[in-house]
Image (tube, one colour):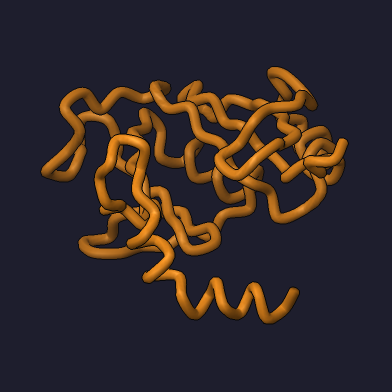
Length: 156
């Protein structure tokens, strides 16, 4: 099994270039680097993404705020003070995001309860990008829908 994984990792580019999407186009996109979240309240937004979700705040060019998790980040724009270029309609509360947790979903639920952050729905079974997931849903301070998930055992 280890040799199969090693082959896949070493030959990733060749495998990807041979696999065509259903529409016949060659893959152009590899992964998501960052998204931009527009908020009405930077402090409340930071509290949620740092204290509740455990992301790492960081500052980059001109003091801009971002929240880092894994190899991705969320860049923050304050409504009315967005950086250019920006989305055509940068609206707080319009996002529906799904994050895969680094801990068991039961621990996520316990953490949310400790922090007195309301769960909107869940735990529920859903389908993620790579297969079955178990999820809970919460809302951030701008009312974006945030799904926190764990990969489910596909055999169950």
